[in-house]
Structure formats: C-alpha cells, structure tokens
Image (cartoon, rainbow, N blue to C red; front, side, top):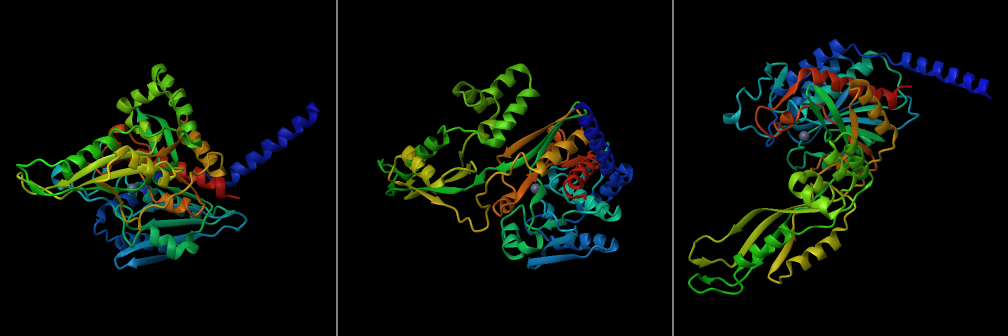
Length: 463
Ligand SMILES: [Zn+2]
C-alpha cells in the first residue's frame, strides 16, 4: 500500500513537472516594459466620459493586435463609441474565458492635478494620468497577457476573449447593456476577469488581493412629497418640506437588516486572520448588534457589505423663503444585497416612512445593472486566482469580496458567467486617486499584475 502510494505520488509529481514545463513563464522584465508602454499610450488618448470617444482607443488596440496577427472587431452601437472584441482559439474542450476592461475614464478637474492628466508622466516609479488605475491599467495588462499567450504559442483548452468596452462610467446605449444584448454570441464565456477587485500594499508589501465575486445592486429612487402651497406667514400641517425632511431622516437612520452570504462570510473569516486582535474579534462576530454599532462608525464599508443600504444624497424644494412650495423632492441611493427581495424591501420602507404624502418613485433602470447572483468561491477560476496570488505576492492573502459599488460584471453574472473583479496592487493612498486627482499606478505593480493575470489564465486555459 505504501509502495503504491509512493509510485502514485511520483507519477503525480512527474506529470506536475511536465505541466509546469508546458506553460512557459513570462519574461517579467520585458512584459513590464511593454505594459508600461501600452498604458502610456492609452492614458494619452483622452476618453473622458462624457463624451467618451472610445473608438480612438478601440482603433489603437486594433492596430496593436493587427501587428501581432490577431484579428479583431470593433462594434459601435453609438458612432465614435466603439468596443473591441478579439479571440484566441482554444481546442473548444472547455468554454471560453473573457478578459475585459473599459476604455473610458471619468472627467478631470485639471486645476486640482499637479501633472497633466493625459501626459502619462512617470514620477518616483509611478505612472500618472486619468485612467492609470481605473481602468486602463487593466486594459493594458489584459492586452499584454493576450499578446503573450499568442507569442508563446500556449496551447489552449478554451478560447481566450479580449473585450475593451465603451461607456462604463456613464449609462448609455454604447455600454455593456447593449453590448451584451446585441453581441453576446461574440463573447459568451464561462469565466470572466474584470475590474472591481481591490488590494492593499502596506509597508511596501502586498497584504491582500481581494477578488470580487459579487456586488450590491444600485436601485436609485426619488422621494416626492406633496402638500398645499401658500404664504409662509401661515404654517401648514401638510408642508411638503417638513414631510420630506421627516421621511429623509427616517430612511437615512433606518438600520436595515444585516446578513451574510457565501462571499461575505468567507471575507470576514479571512479578514480576521490578518487583522489585529481587537478587529479580528469584530470580524468573527459581525452580526452581533454591538459589533454592528462599532462598524457603522468605524468601518462603514463593512457595515454596508452586510445590508441593503439607503442613503439620501440630494434635496430639492422651494424657490423663495416666504413661499411654501407644493412639492419637495429627495434623491436616494439604494444599494441592494444580491438576494434582496426589492418588492418586500420597498413595502418595509413605506412602513418606515409612514406618510401618505410621500411617494417613492424608482428611476428608469433601462441601462443600469441587472440583478445577478454572486460568482462562486470554489470554481476553477477563483482557485486559479488564489494560486496566482501565492506566486506573485507570496505571504499575502486572497480575500473574496462583495463590492458595495457596481461594475459591468453584473451584466455577465446575469448571463450565468462566473465573473471576478481583480485589481493591480496599490496602496490605500493610491486607491483614493481613482476618480480623484493625480491618479497613478506603480509601474512595478503593473508588472506584478500582468504576471498574476497570466498565471491565472494559463491555469484555467492552458492544455
Ligand atoms: Zn472603472
């Protein structure tokens, strides 16, 4: 028996070694140099959205792919707002994997930048520019991995599809909703890697790489109060401003019910293992009301991961101090847990508001994210990402997370795709430059990110 086990483990070892030999490792120096070059070019193409002008990026990518002998297609549901799709063929024994990233960036307030936001200048080892993190770092890294798979002639068991999408930062008919509706057959897949993860570098070391498997669903609405108008010298009990203020206060302070799902349960368990003792104790008991009260103040992002949140953000009422207006309106950002029953939730909210003068008016969701189930944390893709993290950032931890913000992965998950959000390793301070000022990425981490994606993709797609 012992002998047989020994023989078996020898066979496994040998085949493992043979497998390792089949997938050539990247020339890390060359890959980093090239991804930096791609990112520099991409940042210099201004795709502030609105208006986007993403076709400029799509044509740039098409040129790069063409030089490597890879055909691609640009789809342009709105003129000037193109998305690019390309494919490396596998033997078809497994379903495809999609590498996606968006081409557009949020606008820049140049007066707050210390460098030109579209110059891609490198300062102290970091590349500066709008999109250098969100999301052109991923776009450049996906491109680099895609090219390497072709150049190194990696035999594939599944197609690897590259998608550069338009209009992620604003909802429009050029964005993911329409791309999925019209062109799904061009990138139908089993797995996808997209933005949406996070990571943390602390004291020069990667502490964790968070892979997002789920996200909260934005379902914004207005609260509209109506009452009688009149001269403000005469108080009225149905004053719309007063009724709205009361409704806003009620829902804004409402402690919505907390619960865990597969991802957040695992997230808090793993987070406890890398946190100082006091915090670790919170994360092991996140549903304890006393812990909730602490998180609400000290870790609002974790508080939000446990519940559907309701956050009033805008108020509109009146035009003159001595006139009682007939209506008053508030805008509210609701973010639902993936399994929330929104009909029931709205009934609950109506009870909390408890005022017939207040109407809840949902926004038009034509182009917004669909409700979607979380992706699994035991799939081949998730396991490959964990393995890749151990390779490129040994000593760090992979955390599955549910993001409180939304990404276009929702459209994929709604199609049954196991979609994962990842991110180039960055510091806390760097993460605040996303959608902010002086956005930048460490060039060295771009190299790490390329090796990470390459390791994970070859793990699930190489023969
Ligand atoms: Zn983004």
